[in-house]
Length: 474
Image 1: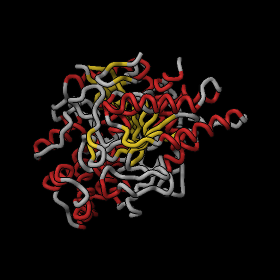
Image 2 (image 1 turned 90 degrees about the horizontal axis):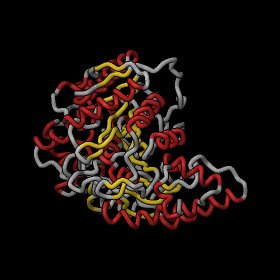
Image 3 (image 1 turned 180 degrees about the horizontal axis):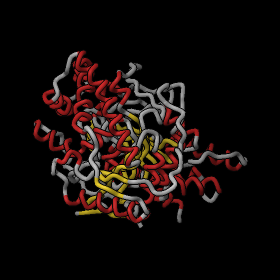
Image 4 (image 1 turned 60 degrees about the vertical axis):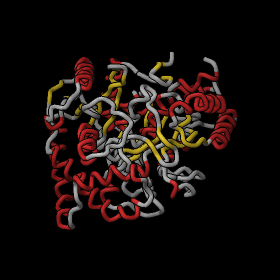
């Protein structure tokens, strides 16, 4: 393989080649910068290059290898970082003009951890304004990101820039965040894998202008990686997990829990809540994933997640109450179009008073308990990321359009509310578009999710990297 094709390698393979000296980190970074120059004008996923610092980091990696120093497990691996995660010396813009010059003085914990493992930040990636403007990745500062499979479909959001960058080979890893599907739906919409960790699994820093987030915004958003293979997702998981004084929520849970003596039971959630809106392509993807796990020896049965509507109502109630207080200030930072998502949600879920807000904090514990009982019987669940095909790249204009866009993603919302880990993994292509499922497990059992995702991937294959318009590379 020539140096100019290194961008097509996965993170783990690339790190092994750099560690062995077969290729240099400088060559790896140069290959990815060349790939960005070739592909990004067509998809607009990378908002700003970190080319100079990436080259310097690569040269330092090569110097250390030549000196016989021990390299980290991701040495020389280029990764992208969403516009709402701090990278030292780079503005954390959140996609809006107000934060254009808010340059971070230090890396956020996940960026720091990836750097410590030898990975190299190569660029920032697009997101919807303030991560509030809905499902489609479009921002005031950087415009629309394009789905490389089909420009008439959204790349998803809010981590759409990272998903597209990883899918097209502009980076081996992406670092995004998920507060209701924002890693999992762009991963699925672009044919890559994504991990939403358990609450407290990865340390993070989600302060805006040094303001600490309030309760709902502490409980739900988690940073998570995107990659083309589950093995690379696992490599990032092992690096990102652990305690950190910058985030006292992070827990010292073991990376790997007790190993099951036999393949665990899998609950299949085909139509969450029984709404009857599961598209045939989505249903086929779930069936294929279930069959792959059954072939791997897992007992499989159809189940329903408990208290789904309570989870959806609780998620909306907690966040809506908090948004109602901050909204007058946030609204000034948004355009009419990018504010519409939150304003429609306010019509559907008016802010509640203190008494109901407090009651809902107790409801959440009860829903978590009900899910924990289900995981005791079925340690793994698989289900849709969205029950419908990838939608068009538009911001809903009416309550009906908003419901049609977000109701299909009710299972990602509910699992976020409960706080459990989930891995999105591709299952194939239907009607020219990537398909996938999410795999969920009990708290801090990301290892079970990753194991199951690998078994699905082994049987159903990897879909990327690809050139825009869905042309698979190699």
